[in-house]
Image (cartoon, rainbow, N blue to C red; front, top):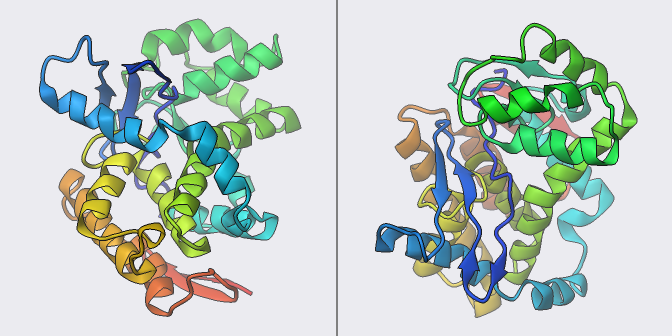
Length: 307
């Protein structure tokens, strides 16, 4: 199945300075977009609580980074990181060749404009704009730079105004360049992979748990809502202790996956949850907490194998 929906991103990091929160778009699997508000502008207590979820996860980031650097590489090891991209690609692109999607660009009719690249950057959810802005800062005059004014205007909508007819061809052409491929990888790591793996390590999770966090971060977005990654983690931690707090790794991950599946179905009733049920859950029940290969799993009825 080719991209059942846009992978949804929060394009701006939350910056914590003396209790002030920067507005951060958080995107849910159904394509809706939410913004976590700062305490000074929040209209109700709910956004306060949502922002606090991420605040608690990130407030000691510099100390945590130092601590996690001393832990085993886990999913950050080159071979495991490659495996992680293959697992995600099996669910998002129906292939193990995740690099084949650098030049992918299409409007899949989900209300988010064009979906593009290896992890589904979208013209309607700010993340594609951020990617092109950062890329243009490093490589002025690239083939996508001329579309920045239009990308700003269509941000938050499904409009193609100012993008057609040349944007898709420009994206595909730029994706042939190593520099743009590197830019996509760096944005993926900055927003999704690195934060997910760091938090998983600090929660005492092994390589499988780190991947479970990463896939959830990619699919649900690094937002603070009840169906976004930080909300899911907060709910799981209320129901079970993480291994770092003396809990059972298998029990905690099983609960996290239960919560995640419910969140997927809340946003899109009837959604195929096989990326959890016949992949991650299978690895967990097999006791493969180190995500050792060979691996066999099914997503959307297709079988994948990594030797």
